[in-house]
Image (cartoon, rainbow, N blue to C red; front, side):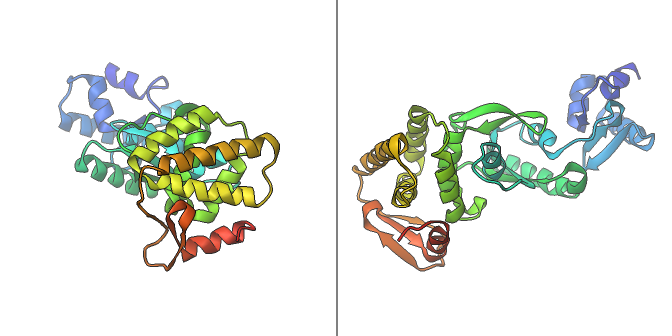
Length: 291
């Protein structure tokens, strides 16, 4: 039992799964034997089951939070914590998140099912964990490391989207953040903060190679900010430069793009070759003085 004492003692991992335990014991016990031992440790109060196959090591005296389970739910994927939680972290949104959105690249459909299953199971312990996880399959290809940095969120170190990546994600994952009105709020707030415009340009071009409509969507939002007459001095110059880059990206194609729920009627913006849904436009106009 010495190996188990190390595994579930005060210096052991805070959260534990059977696969973690099997790796730790390095084949010193069968899977059935390990399962029996974990059940026995649970009945003795050493472990607390917080989801199917997920245990809290009570010896550490630690109460887990939802951010603590992210690394092992997504440990076999490229991933980052983004969208609403990170917008709040960067001061782009005042909304304190309850559901933490994780953008990830699954290796295959089996992994997608596994992640979805874990997130659903953890939802049953949301009161204990202080939130839920929402998995979002990445739409910008396997190179998920661009625009991602390490940060401490709620006491845990996690890969999160940078402020530059978060702006771009607002127009890629618009439905997940609550619509185009929210995207406009994020962009407006971000432009009043220190932004690395060279880094922004690099991430933008990478996203554009995957999703061409990114340039049109961002262009429309930036134009709205300018029309509000809130951007002045150096900020206006930076926005003007961004707009030129976005228009430059669009020169090579005459394609038109869509933004918003398909069931809606749309309004067409010729400059950006963008069909915007009526529900998105309503929110945009509520959020700004744009006409």
